[in-house]
Length: 228
Image (cartoon, rainbow, N blue to C red; front, side, top):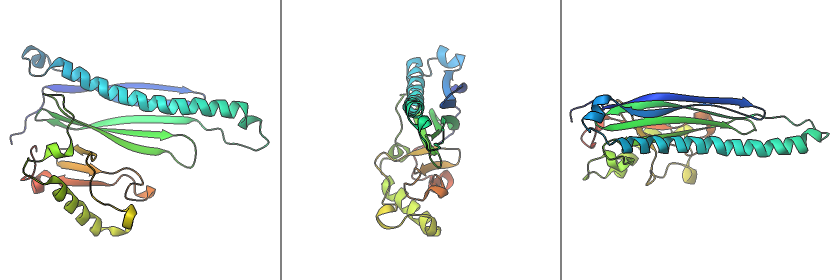
């Protein structure tokens, strides 16, 4: 299909704070409409507002959850741990969030949100959350939506991922802990080259591997895709 740039743009908002026991530095996207999009009714303004609200609410929920844990830890440390004869480490809980708009055309936008939390211990945890929207309808796209209706997308994707794993099997879990097929709500995002399926830390690989990603490139799998 012919590729067209969207009639919206994305600005970035940064919020940060550093207090005792808790700090955060968050940059999140806000979709806005070009003037001609408003005048020509290309997009429904309320749909764009709803998308922004959903993204913002998710981010605040993530931040506030870690803050709640930090305040519980503060109480524990202040009232008990700091008064103990043992030398307990005083942790500062942390949240960092940034984002990347990886695809923005054909009335579709794909945003990758990288979220990091540290709540004590040896290391923090990094998560990817992705927001793939049809800007005309406001619908959040599933992986199945990316494929033509007649395509058995699970078969296509599973076969591709298994082939990729077999190219480097030593870094993946085996047996019951290994890859057993994509989920119904499989995580993914879109970039300029293709559709990227990804898995969380510890999901199919050890922590040191990071977040496993598998890209189905448009130029190789174009016959299966609804969008490219």
